[in-house]
Length: 610
Image 1 (cartoon, rainbow, N blue to C red):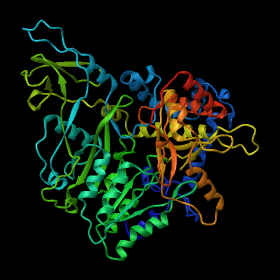
Image 2 (image 1 turned 90 degrees about the horizontal axis):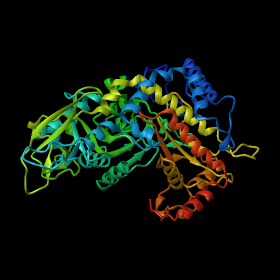
Image 3 (image 1 turned 90 degrees about the vertical axis):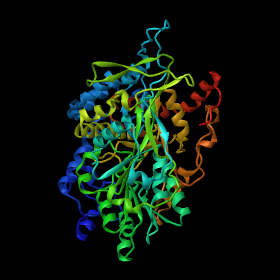
Image 4 (image 1 turned 135 degrees about the vertical axis):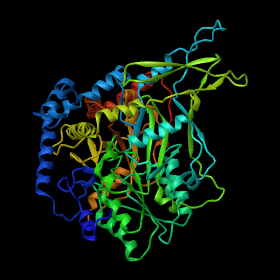
């Protein structure tokens, strides 16, 4: 379904909640350029009310210049829920976290470096760790305990993408069930799409680039305000094929999309009667949280582009929004990990629209490296019988099945759960997201991420008339439409940026896991010299970090802004974001980094390259 030309032109401009019920069908307010397109007054008023409400969550304080002056966790939470009483409706997430992911609370570990979707729960993993196997009746040995809970293993396939989509192949019972569970979770029709399991997101992007049949429009057009290994690999592959690479641009300092330029690049094909280019598009930036309209995808399709939709950074259940029922991309990429805060290993998923298989090359006997099968996990075992634990209830009863597996003397590893053994993988991580639902997940992350943004902006260096901010946030600030990710940097009282790698290292010592990335494709006004001065400050090297166990290898040699990132997920709670705020506030102490350096040396820790 495609909008008319007039609708497409209107949709290319910023559009707010008044246009569509789903935030992702609207462009973000931060997509401001020098022009001021018309906006819905009711939507503007609603936005202003939300900003005012979020800002009041720290009342009566607006700025903090000393980390010791921060309100307590309890007082902050009371103020937060007083302004946003709706947050209490998401308490089921806290109960799930306490019951199934208790390691997060026991270790006081706050994870802001996970993207994708969690398959299993920590409690599920621990049960698999500890439950003993049953020794055979002829054996006098003690019951055997498993040493890992890998749930499944991956096996690489010698196949190319086109043949995999057209003909499929043998799949185990385990793989079939996981495939169907993921299709259901992602709200993707098996009649319309084929799911191909890929080793990881990087491999998925490369396979699409290698397999895509560029026609007379030999162009790759991407919409990313940051770099990633997956995107870099795709660009490199396309350049080797002689493909011209285009990128959307984002204006400094708010990183609003230069939508006029993007529209011109998207619509140029139709005017020149070209088709067959590849348009790679995320629904929001997983680094800055800036959301982008679904309508860009529709406009690209209308003008002859094939579309790869990157959904790796979406919130759980966000694929169930109205937009996915209207706009059908040719390809979609997402990723799954095993256990949040414990086991980030997993796999990528590439969805290929069945009617778009003609867009893939016929590579002959060549194979696409990275296509995998999911196979039952191996475990060390010397007994003739083992016990497999499966969940038949949401979180309570455990059913034990006894399976007979002949012992193979050639190896001490026996495969669990082959097709005839009745193994059922229960993806409780996905079940938890299903039970909470899209509306509550979206509400919860909206309140939490905006409170965090407001709290970070409240930190100011003391003894300055112009109130120099400790933290600079890149991309949208407070907004009900922003995604659950924040990109920021810390600046000392002299205005010098503190190396993001150092911030990550110090956060890690405080059981806070942060990410990092490089902002790219930033456009500065030709007339604004002050902006270019900021660019020079942002892109040059940070502070000396070797004394804290860091290496100079942490910095990229390519131009861009190195930033710290924090991604909020389904299981993030208020204490997590408060702990992050409290930790970052310690940089208000001008001697904080130096104190940490001396403490590090006193502990006689070795230098660690990261």
